[in-house]
Amino acid sequence: MMRLVSMSDLLERLRGRGWRMTAQRRVVAEVLDGEHVHLTADEVLARATARLPEISRATVYNTLGELVSLGEVIEVATDGRAKRYDPNAHRPHQHLVCSGCGAVRDVHPSGDPLSDLPASERFGFTVSGVEVTYRGLCPDCGRA
Amino acid sequence: MMRLVSMSDLLERLRGRGWRMTAQRRVVAEVLDGEHVHLTADEVLARATARLPEISRATVYNTLGELVSLGEVIEVATDGRAKRYDPNAHRPHQHLVCSGCGAVRDVHPSGDPLSDLPASERFGFTVSGVEVTYRGLCPDCGRA
DNA sequence: ATCCTACGATGGACCCAGTCCAAGTCAATA
DNA sequence: TATTGACTTGGACTGGGTCCATCGTAGGAT
Image (tube, rainbow over all chains, first blue to last red; front, side, top):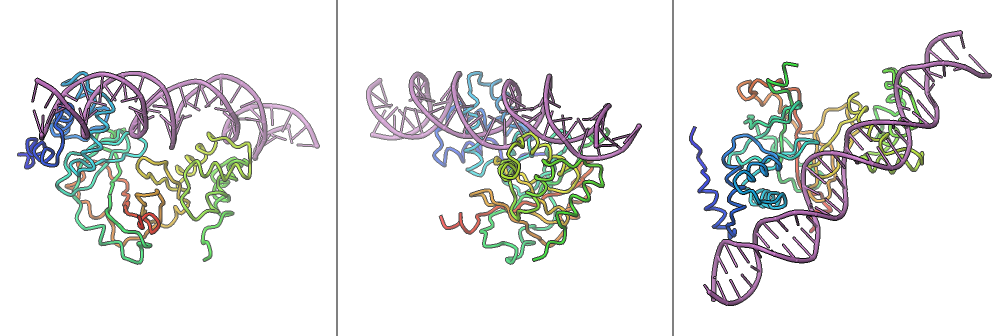
């Protein structure tokens, strides 16, 4: 399957937003873009270190945080475990998390949960978004 | 408003399940039942300490964990912050979390997200549940 | 009423994910 | 190519939570 949003596009967008392009940031962005799974910060660090041995943990966290707040990457909390980072931020989707090993898959449910929350159930909050997280056991963890 | 599920019911159920009833467990259960907000483990510890000064942090965590696995209390992960504990486990509901202060409200959206996930989107997982978490700013945090 | 014992409580060490900071480095402009 | 402020570094630190060896006690047995 062809990727609709390529790496070069991402770097392009970041440069356009005034990002100073450093070797570290490029490597982190490339690692995220190159993997189709949802990596933890430590896994990103490990893969980044393979390409750029002197990169630091703090920089990986900084860069991931920036990518998240720029809306280029989505943070997936997996309850007790380390957060995972999802580079597929441009197509709306939800997540299916394995309770056994923490693996994450993107899923595309029908329906719009935001419209399922009437004003009377918003209690004066300014509701800005909704996350739907399905829980279960992946095929590997399922065969106990 | 009258509580439909009272404290004595809870203690009753626990005893019925073979729980050894200790002063510590009683205090933790009472604290959860007495509050209508969603407390963190530390808040539970603080309130429990007020009634039983020598109670330990480990016991609070143990007891909360037991209540969760007995299905009497629901754990609400609030992304980076401490987990919160929701004693309202007997009526299905979802959560609205303030991105500013972490406060949690119970909400009751219409619709059933589980049925919105077709088999083709389950990837061989045994899907056991779904959480819907609305994000936004509460009235207090909203007025910047 | 008392004894027994397995289940529960204790608290302090420990762990992990993540953040902070002061000092050093370097990308992008002029 | 000189300048400078944004970026990186690594090591200390924090918060939330877990572990564990030891001590205490609820509740059945007698």
